[in-house]
Every structure is written in structure tokens, then in C-alpha cells.
Length: 270
Image (cartoon, rainbow, N blue to C red; front, top):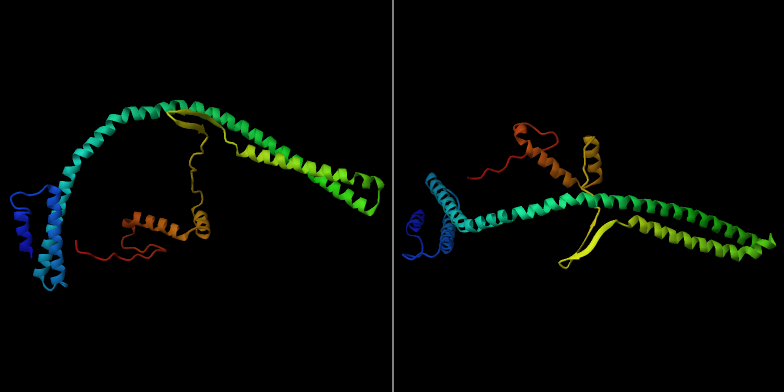
């Protein structure tokens, strides 16, 4: 069987007019696939050292053929990759210059948006305070209306009976005003300062304040681990622990890792 592979390597595929490199390699892979199938069909178990040596030699030849295919692939893709690198290098300066120009003027916009944000927060704060005051007044009016209705029902005071409807209507008006102020306060809190909005080359763009990524700092590792284990996905935490253990595997070699069971990997022919 290995003699067939040797003959295959010497003569190639296609006689005196071999096809292009890719087609040649495809034919070679097809032939090796057939040879491998014959191996698997004829040899289910290695019975002696001679067979073991033949298998090792065959695997070596397969790896060599794989290396040849890789060389051909790199040979074909190298001009494309070189052209890609050259193109990226060609456009690098104008592209990165645009980033620098943006970064030069961005602080001006950030300062303006920060000013708008502070002003908007002040407006929202005032609207919230007005809404809370309006709600307090409306609650008192509703309590007065309820008390007037009760007095009128009991007939305690003639004047109360005369003013009951007006008191209730006034309470309802104040409640509606309080609701409007609450909605206005909520809108003010949701408002986001922005700038721009013009159209360039058919594309509209506005700038607004965008919160940066949160920075997490461990101040008590044991408390953090205990909380995360009790509240969140344990599998995710397990992955992090295993990753940390593997990162320092050399330091743990031959030793037990507290809280972790280590099973040796299955040996394979290489």
C-alpha cells in the first residue's frame, strides 16, 4: 500500500501534462483518501511493529503532503495578500489623518454637550421639584374634597354642602396639572443633548454624549466571588476559574489544585 503512495509521489497525476496546482492537489487528496480508506478497511488493529512502522511512515507522508498543499496555497494567495497590505498601507495616512482631525475638534463638541447636559439636568431637576409640589397640592385638595363630601353627606354644615362640587372639581384640576408636570419632568429627564443633524452626502449625523465603558475594580475578591456565585450563572464563573487554573498549569504540575479535579488528557499518536 505504501508502495502505491511512493509511485503516486514519483509520477504525479495527469501524465506529461499535469493540470494546475489546485487541480493537482485535489486529485492527490482524492487518491490519498482512497489509500486511507484501504488502510482502514484492511487494518482495524495494529498487530506487529512492522505494521506500526508502516502506519507511522504513512502518517509522515500525509503530513508532508499537507505541507506541500499549504505551500501551494500560500504561493497562490501571497500576491493577493501583498496587494492587500500595499492597499492598506497606501490608504493608511489619509485614513488615520481623518481620525486625528476628528480627535482634534471632538473636545470642543464634548465641552458644549457637557454644558447642555448640565443645563438639561437643571431643567429636569426643577421640573421634578415642581411636579412633586403639584402632586402634594393635589393630594391636599383631594383630601379637602373628601372631607367636604363627607361633611355634606352628614349635613354638618350648609356651607360645606354648597362648596362640595367646587372643591371636587378643583381637586381634579390640580391632579391633572400635577400629572402634566410629572410627564414634563419625565420628558426632561429623558432628553439627551445633541448637536448637528445636517446632511452630508445624503447622510444625516448628530453628535451626542455617549457614556464610556464601565471600569470594574476588585476591592474584596472573596465577597465578589460569593455574591456572583449566589446571584449569577455558575457555569460562566466555572469557565473563568478553569481558565485561570490553565493559565498557571505549569505551577500546579504534579500538585493538587484545591477545589479542582484534574484529569490527565488522553494520549494520542503524534
